[in-house]
Image: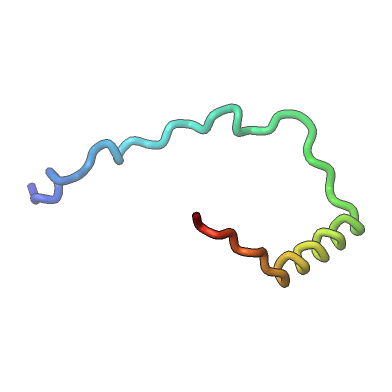
Length: 59
C-alpha cells in the first residue's frame, strides 16, 4: 500500500447532496423575448460596456 492511499481525504469521496428542490422551477416556462426586446437589451448592454461607473471612495 502506498503512502498516498492513507493521505486521501475520504470526506471528498462522497457525492454531493442533491440540489434543493427550491432551486428548480416548477410551472410555466419563461416567455421568449421579442425582437424589439432583444434589440433593446443589446443596446443597453453596449451602452453599459462603453461607459464607466464612478469609483466610490474607500473611507
